[in-house]
Length: 299
Image (cartoon, rainbow, N blue to C red; front, top):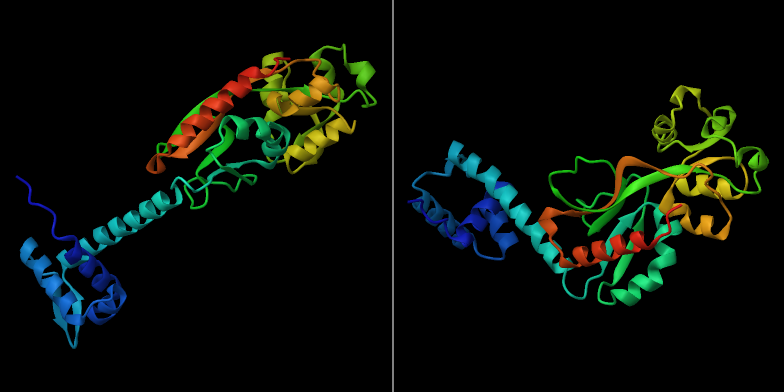
């Protein structure tokens, strides 16, 4: 039968003394006396039946056993601190911080915020925009809404919301609109296509299912972010490639048209939540997002 863990106070005293390499500094950090820390170290050594420190001049030096315990205890206490901070942050009064790209935020989420807040009034959603630099593993984010391809990270709980569908779009204001709107998809091979530098595979991913060799495509003006790309398309600057949800409102309003429709890619729009930070609000949000995506008209 395995032995019980040593007393927590003894482990705390050891972790601090080993990390600071000083009983006095450990006592100061833990707000106890030097003698109290020394007693806890003795309790721990007696419990384990091994020596953790040896005298080294006027100080102490870790034994091999002490060094092993130092590494494990430091990691364990750091993990406890992280989880306690997360639990504090995830109290009932804390907002739920959702990260997503600026284009997804501006073109899809913000137009639906009124309905989301009305349907989930207790969520207290706070939005954080970024492109490529958002990671729900870092403090400050509770979840991430992102287009991505499986396999999913092992440390993430992933709610798959919808398959990604992309397709070429253009504005009736575009000079080539009348020539292209009833032409086959292959007509795009001669066009300088608008694209994003952040996702160079978008045009090739669309081309292959339509029997078009990716090498036959000619890329024109590039943009750093998808939001700028779609604004350029609305302004009539050319044909862009876009995820269907992000242009749905423009299609309904006639600002953009999608003559060749949309094709599924291997990617999904998904909500990522660190498994270590379980939050019941994420499931509610995922359910709402999935239903909202299903409401959209398919073009």
